[in-house]
Length: 176
Image (cartoon, rainbow, N blue to C red):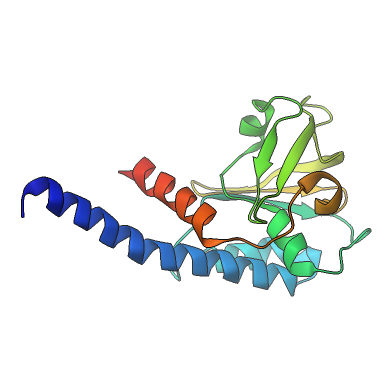
């Protein structure tokens, strides 16, 4: 076996191991958020996306301030509020108005509806507390009301293996 084959085999082996743990972490995050009231989302998110306990998903969580307009499917609602990319407010400001942020709800994305610093909105919902929590992997922001994936998001399936696998491949390659 030559060096190139060895490196390719090693990379595939690492991805196979990482893909299971990242996908499991994503499902645990969605499940934990779905079963928690919005007031507890921050602590639940930090507990389930913990680098000591499992694989960490670089991500951004939008926590609703109120429970108005709550969806019947809490798993879809939870998945739609998690963006698989760490975006502190300074990063969000760089996003163009009408651009989209992918979510853990497969096929759905959050729409940046206003990108001004004083009234930044996603899916028409104002971000009312910026950078509640930020570290090298995660960012958390509070929004006025829950986001509505049926109006702005598009699709409605929970995460599927291939889009998450693509995201994981990108993440692994970024760290290498």
